[in-house]
Image (tube, rainbow, N blue to C red; front, side, top):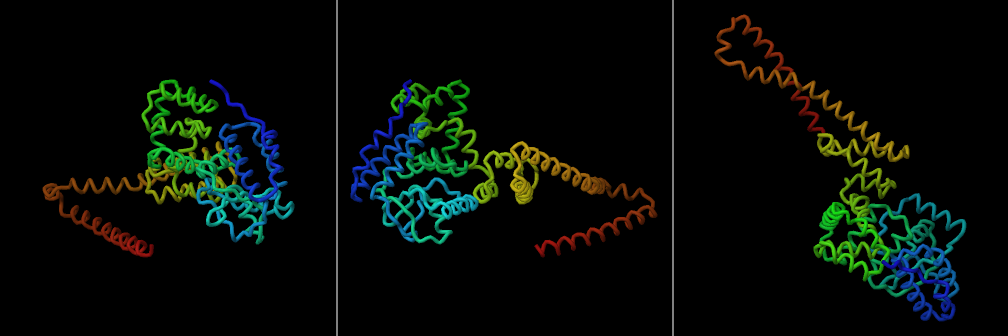
Length: 385
């Protein structure tokens, strides 16, 4: 297998300074942008250093414009859906102290749509800025793929955003239903692991698309499995890692997804907290959710490590088990008494002295009065709810 070699961007961009007019600058920016995406797909370790050279060259061109924030819209195909308030505040402080160091990149549609730089745009809006420096490029083909590659290789996407973006990209390229994709991937990964072939699949990340297809062709893959693996490898992603660490985010409880997006809960913490469930606790979903939310808030407030989070989950589940056992001990006498009463037949009553029957009747009358009082109290409380 031949390892891809990253070309030298410095020489490649040497002609960029020749673009003087705006139309020429936009064409050159589009050409350079295409080269960047090619390099990102190759996972070049030299890419970020070379990107700085490109940025400097772009800023020397006449393609940078001052654009009103009112003309700019967020990209609906942006893989990154989570922008924590702390992150926006940090960028706002940077803009105030240092100004806008790099232009954002916009796509020309009916409106100007952000391709790169949404965090700067959100921060500028918070600061009530009127304009941002930007370059405008024609809309690339396969916009979602290019936005995804940008996010995967340059931004720290949270695992939930990453999972949803990858599923969307797979659905676009395979015509599979999004809800079926994680199951199909899990099936093929388990089978290849059992066949001890998964490591050879991972090695295909660094080879050419032609070599990838040759090696995949010799495996016993159905059409859907081959399509999914092809797209993941093209995105420089490890299928086994996506199956084990990323796609489980899609099945998280909604309160945990909210905590990831609004409070910065880490994916590994969310997986640990997911164990606090109706199935594991033996309680209604509403009760399990309440316990899970309380534990999640403690994890976030105290910034607990993954190990501490797992310990806290174990403790919460043990406490719930203890409460359930306590409730069972309290209910058991009632269950036993009910069964005993059913066993008292009419024939048995006839053989008992009248004085004993009167005493039994009085005990029952008092208990019935207590039961009626409790039932009425519960009915009042239920109506309040």
